[in-house]
Image (tube, rainbow, N blue to C red; front, side, top):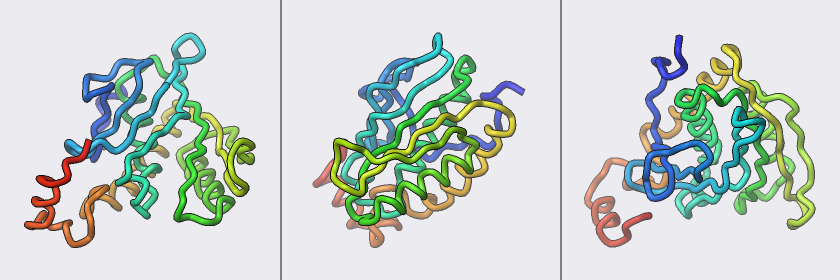
Length: 194
């Protein structure tokens, strides 16, 4: 079965190139929820003769940084699923995740949670190390996710669980706005995101 024929893909997020242009390999990646920009990944280099994509430079917007559900995990998995299902030449996605989450005081626990997530989606050579050019307690998690039927199923299984956390309340929507009431519409008019 071709990767793009996977019936489980109904992304909550939209993956594009810069300024919502169609994505092509090697371009920066922009991630949207509806019309709201959530994050930019730049650069996103191709390695190993164009068969491996590397994710490292993750720049979230305020709505992602403020979301206590750790929206970066959803974004990472959505990007992986998008790349694997649309670009068959990509056989692996390597990553170095190092974004500090300010409200999460325990950097060790955060790194361990990232590591566990990467292992659950089938990543290998997952390592945790201190980030030497950052404040104490800031760690990086690195590894590689290699495409196979098993790892693809693991990724999609974890992604489905992650999506369930965001169906009722998308990223950036405040609790009292989840129903799409007057406050939500006023907020969109007064404070457009982008």
